[in-house]
Image 1 (cartoon, rainbow, N blue to C red):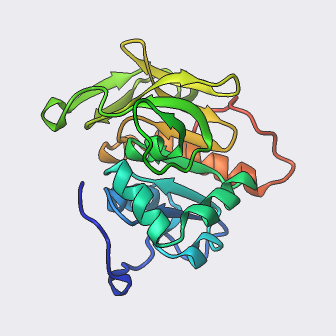
Image 2 (image 1 turned 90 degrees about the vertical axis):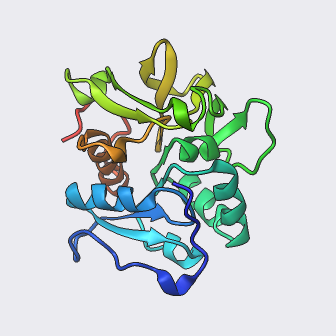
Length: 225
């Protein structure tokens, strides 16, 4: 999970089904972006690896993967991606962050001043479940996705210490907040892309579909398809 992209010439081809009306990007500077691309392909979504500011204009939604949150923030600044992403999200583009992606999206990190996108109204604790050797899997209830629990992989995972008034808590593990949504922002402390369960990615796909339909209400009253 620590590979860092450095050469633009190494860009892999887009995955998914070409010609579809919706395109979702995965920030591919560092971390497990390839697993998200494969998951989106399974969800029948056209997906691209995003590494350049121009690509932000081509997508309808963006996923920020797990990896190292400090590296993601620094590389996003280095490649001048932070402001284009922030502007698109503030204008309604859905954004989904997992693990380190959730940290980068947050307004505040406990005890840290690392570079942040700072859009999701939460305070998070880094590495809150322990070190790499303390990684684990668990089934967590998430009523939004139906009665069946979601399988979650926690790897040096954060959790949400505080959530703002507009943030809906979607899931907890041992009373700790591990999945939230605030309007067009979705954040998970775990790695759903490392399991066979597509439901959280399909929920994000639905968020993107709704954002493309101006008449669609912004709500959480549906199950992911």
